[in-house]
Length: 247
Image (cartoon, rainbow, N blue to C red; front, side, top):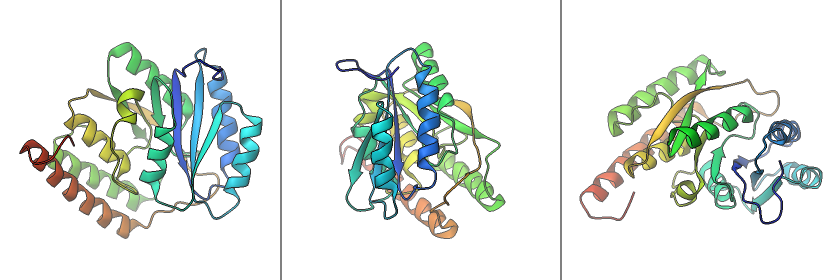
C-alpha cells in the first residue's frame, strides 16, 4: 500500500544514492512491486548525494511513476553516512529499513525484519549476509573487521556492517551518525547497543551487482574503518566517564 495523506507509513525504506544512473530504475521498480503487496502503508526515501551522472534525472522520472517514492538531495557528495542520515531524517515510518540502492539486498527481507521487530519486541534487527557476494579479499576483510568490533565494543553480532537493518523509526531518527562512509552501519549498531536498545540479528539475501560499480577502495576503506572505530571507542569511554553527553 502506498502512503496516503494523513497515513503514517508502517515501514520506510531509507537509502543513499550516488551515481546509480544505470541501476536505480530497476531497483526502485523491484522495491515498489514488493512493497505494493504489503497491506500496511509504506514509503521509499532516497537521498541523491550530489550525483554527477544522470541519477537526478532518473530519480525525477521515477518519482512521477511511483507515488510511494520521495527523493531528498544533498547538493554535493558528502559520503554514505551523510546521505543515509538525510534519507532517515526524511522518513515518517513506524519502522525504518536502511538499505543500499545498488540492488544487492532484497526489500522483501526488510519487510520480514520489520515484522520480526514488531512481533518479538526488538528495538531493531540487523541483517547478516548469507553467502556474501563479493571478492575474496573483501569477504575476509569484513570478517576481520567484525572480529575487531566484537573485541573493541563487545557487540555480539556477526555482521555489524550489513547495510540492511530495520529499527524503530523514533529511535533511528534520533540516532547521530558521524561516519561518512563504510563504517556507518557498524556505527549504528554500536550506538544502539551503547544506548541500551535491544538488537536482534537475522540472515538476509546478498546478491551481486547487476549494474554500476562499487565506490570502495579496499585498503583506504579498511584504514578509515579502523580509525573510526578507535574514535568511537574513545567517545564511548568519555561518555561513560561522564565527560560528554549520550553517545
